[in-house]
Image (cartoon, rainbow, N blue to C red; front, side, top):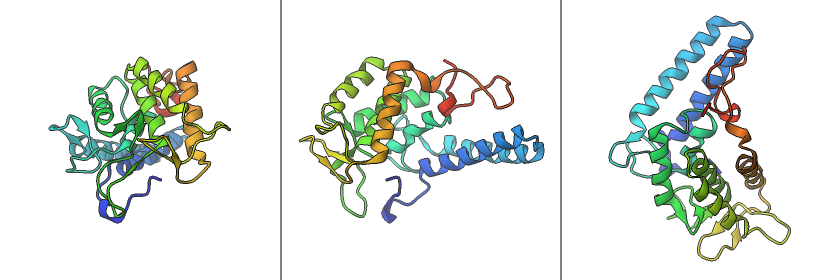
Length: 222
């Protein structure tokens, strides 16, 4: 689902961010194994990638991180910056990005991946997984009531067996695309755990036992 049509293949923020994830995690693994030189190299590369994204992926005009460098379009995958610990939920840029995406990409409580035209034309349906990404993001930046309201609305549209498809028609709530879709349900489980237990974003922890934001599933210190 994160594959992007040829017409949109530029320096996508999500793709660049995943390169940062790879280098950051590789550095932590190397650090844990005592491979200090490898760790330093990985962290240096990760830092360079991150600096590039922060400089070129942010739009002063929109006050948000955008789909790709120089873009004015929004991309729901950018919300994964929170999941992977690229920036903490308290960062004003993340808060502003979440609010802008909510205004731009949410339709009747459902989240579009993006609205820019691609090789198939203008997107018509929302993605279930993106919807849960938005719910998570709202919760993390302090919009807990809005997150829970959105969750309550969305789960009403699962089928009689409690299953979701890949996408959903925003006007009718009709489930469309691959069915049942695995990553829709993985996102649902993560969101339920986050809303019910706050499990996913607690506490600073490093592999070597030292304090410091590990990010992502080891969550940021609030």
